[in-house]
Length: 171
Image (cartoon, rainbow, N blue to C red; front, side):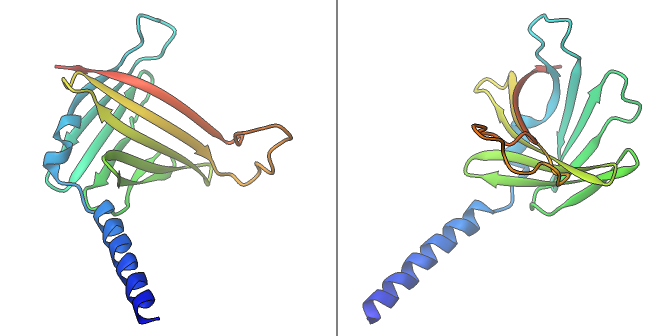
């Protein structure tokens, strides 16, 4: 019995230490590859709206400015490297974001208030080996509470959408 309890304790300690390590804060050096001005790769398709992301990294935060044509006040989001939530103005509401480490991935998760209802955007950011392309895997989830059960045969909730976009580094 003692060996079983000791083994359970050891397994718990190992698992817990892995979780702590997985949630360790980022360092600015880990995120420098993300820094720069990135333009959406529209692959020559003029129907794709232009978008630019300006990412800066400081000793305590990752800042992302999303610039789109027609935006009077582009979102300027700040993510603390320690993973704590930060809030920014967003229209008449606010956007609350946090930076998450998932294995080797850099993830931003932002909850936007739109008409007093939350919309969550989760971006997984990665830069290719030569630093010329930023890939953003996005999951958008509308959380207004009226989605209800899935219809028969549906495999994905209608309130969730996924997209992958690629940005090209600009000088």
